[in-house]
Length: 356
Image 1: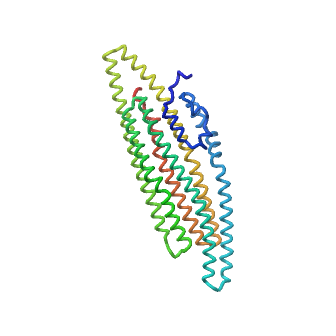
Image 2: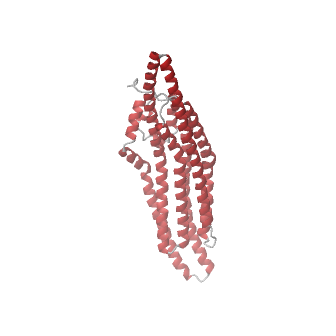
Image 3: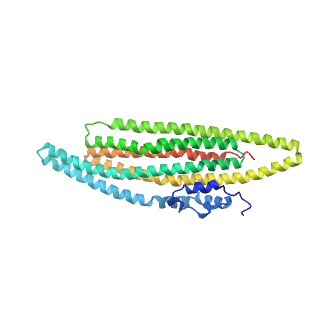
């Protein structure tokens, strides 16, 4: 079996090293093999619905119970706030009543900040993982394209991924924490003092941030898809011209060379497919736990906001809605940023080998 398949390039091992340990421990052993046939079998197992569902549940199973505990705590605080809001009418001094309301809102705010900070830390950790995966993908893509004779496609893909890595490291990863901190600060001010209307400003910041991020990723996707596809077509044209010339000038040897190149092309194509599909699956396994955590916590804040509205806690309701909205934009930012690497693996699978 070892002689029937291509040997995995060394860069593939470096790419697997960039995968987080909690995900790597759940992967089939064949995925770490040097033989493309064993890797292909492992990828086929990974693509099964039962495996994906089981792996996803093992990665995010604890999150559901954590969010249930958070929801119970916030609901308890909201009930306490509603009781205090009723009792404060007995205070004849208005300043005491406002202080009472401020304290209850502050306790809920601290709970929101604590849980949201952990969620933002998870997002930051995912972006760091995405940077590591992209760093390891650049030489891997170059090696796989070059093995199939797609030299121009290898250069285009490496250039596109290098640009994506620069934007990801310098813009997204370094800006996500300050951006969330600013939004949380304005939301806190608006929740504690509704007379300061900062909701429009926060909404504008969120929309502009995701708009800029979407625009940059759209440019990267357009550049990566156009240059890689055109490079692959150019490489195929050059290789076909070379085989045609060899077949006319040296008929017997040229025909043998053509058959040999087609055989090599089939092996390289299989290797590309195995690596490309495994890359997509590994990216999804790294992405989905973060998305599920964000979605569950966002749902928790939305349910809490609904309860706050029922209890007449208007300030707490606005605060919960703002934090829920922030998590929605984080979901968009994480998904948008992952699209470039996802497209690069898709292009790797669909771009034909120039040797074929």
